Length: 253
Image 1 (tube, rainbow, N blue to C red):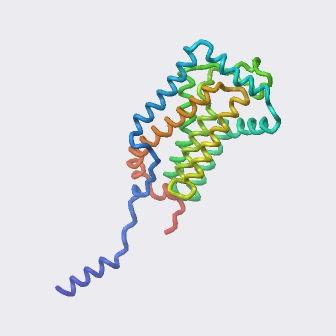
Image 2: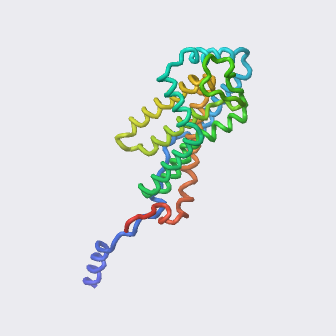
């Protein structure tokens, strides 16, 4: 009996520990504690801005003056920056960058869950902006009223700005990757700065009003907050059903 007990204790120490379940690999998105009320308040802010520009007489005329003033003072260097941003944060190039980044996270970090979370977060700003565009259908600034129209656009998709919404959502997505590292704060600051520069560029080019870009910060933030809350609540159960070989491809034994 004594020998049997000794063998049992020995086996407890020498038996390899089973690998953790796939669910323990789940990486949550950063979210505020009360994510649903926060998301609703941010959406409400977009709605208030949208109603304001539609109902307040002369508001659009006053905002057009900002675009006209910037159009009057175009310089070569700033124009090059603004037009580069116009291309880089547009839907075609922007989506391609997100796909490449997400694939890189999946293949090189061997983490499909993080890759999907990154891609969804980065795209959430566009989704939100498109939804609000349909709701308010605001006409873009009239290029004929600008002194130097750089990229004339027409249509009822001015409010909010898709470029700015993408920049804000991308900042959230990059912070998600850098969180809990020494790069978290620099990434957050850089992301906020880039979003502000993109907002400036949309006014400089003359394709949006100031309230368009302001609403984009609220819309994209609302999308990121609501997505994080839903992701953290429902994604773990879905991840449990995905084979580990898919979640972490080429994982070495």
